[in-house]
Image 1 (cartoon, rainbow, N blue to C red):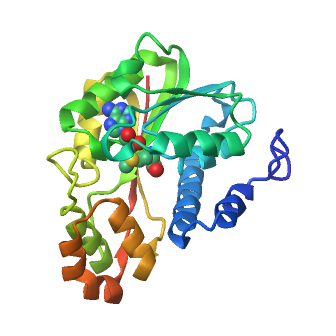
Image 2 (image 1 turned 180 degrees about the vertical axis):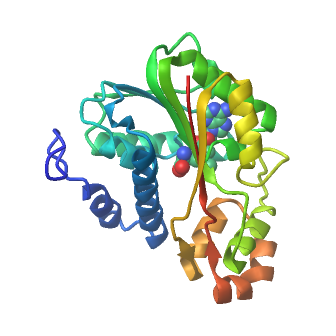
Length: 267
Ligand SMILES: C[S@@+](CC[C@H](N)C(=O)[O-])C[C@H]1O[C@@H](n2cnc3c(N)ncnc32)[C@H](O)[C@@H]1O
């Protein structure tokens, strides 16, 4: 990528402009920027920009996917997206497909509508398996299954990476976000907070057969208040009566993302 322009002639920051043009809420823009910084943090720790064949599992609507595709080396040959798009995420596939199209990446991307463990036999010898905020939707048992499936499709020496919001809150606004999240009306799993702790991740990665395991805590500031806070809480299906009850605290304190926990390991 030269001067921030990729071979499709698209500047890095056009995605942000694109989101703005479409009158997306400030909250979406902030999330996009947040994920863009998160990708930088991952790249700082692992030089994955040389990867040519990539699987991203749990891509959702692509708020992490597009910044990642922007920043991976332009020679990425294939970007395989693996997501079942069920339940509250049923509509996200359309948004993702649109974002990929409008970003000029259609030629490289392939969407497999299966859970991560369903990619076996459809994908092989990839250099990188990466996901963002997916473990939060899985049970502990499923996290291990996901990692084992990742290992099966990676080439020898390939990387598995997952970033997710940390289970450790240190500010009042972070604690408020965690408390509100426990009131979602569509809980996907019983262990309902964001991410498993780092000890669990370490043990599971080892059990799944990975080596060179590292877990990094990174703080990317994102404090939301007013309508932006409400947008994200509604998107997470936090019950209305809970939002009403905590409205004053949400206005006064805001809600804040805790740090990110980035797990990196190697086959
Ligand atoms: C919290 S969203 C995160 C979306 C996206 N990665 C982001 O950061 O915006 C979780 C995503 O994981 C997907 N997901 C849930 N269970 C999955 C599974 N077993 N395999 C692959 N993806 C899964 C959901 O469909 C959803 O798109």
